[in-house]
Length: 203
Image 1 (cartoon, one colour):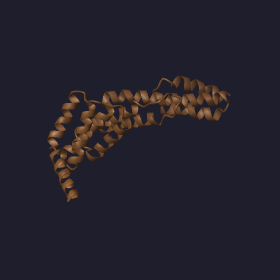
Image 2 (cartoon, helix red, strand yellow):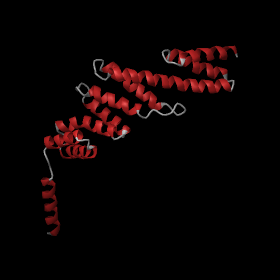
Image 3 (cartoon, helix red, strand yellow):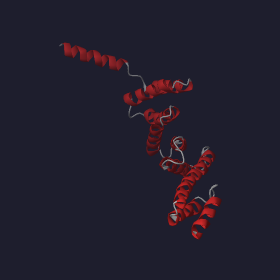
Image 4 (cartoon, rainbow, N blue to C red):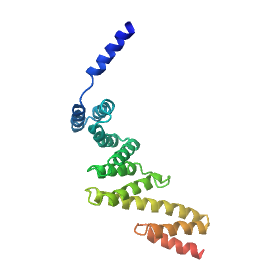
């Protein structure tokens, strides 16, 4: 009897705390406007747990993507953005989600001496934005980020090429410098790559 009584109380408590999807969504928006990201995230989590199959739950994905990005949780932002696009590929906010995905990778670009996987992911995400949503307001900034990521990737190839050249491993160096010339022809590294290619061929 005590167990049944407790269960009934818990159920009543749970029912009393359920809010409408509209209410939770609007609260999240108000929290975002006020700059309270934590409260906004909590309301979005409540919306998804209480109304998982509602239209607003689906719409809340784009808000969650933005909140994760603003909190610096870039992996989560990219993941949520991809989920939103997979569910809503033609939605008016799909371009924005793609932009947040690209920026999430862009914010994690490492030093030139480190592995450049994240740089390539940023390049691919921004390229996808330009190709899939050419009329988007984010295209111009995406093109700027593409130029920067390409320059970073070319710089990495130059760094490795110089290393091989200094060790007199000229064939390996030539492969790196040729990659810069052929794959990244509009970056600031091309002139040096051509000069070092000439040196390596002579050597």
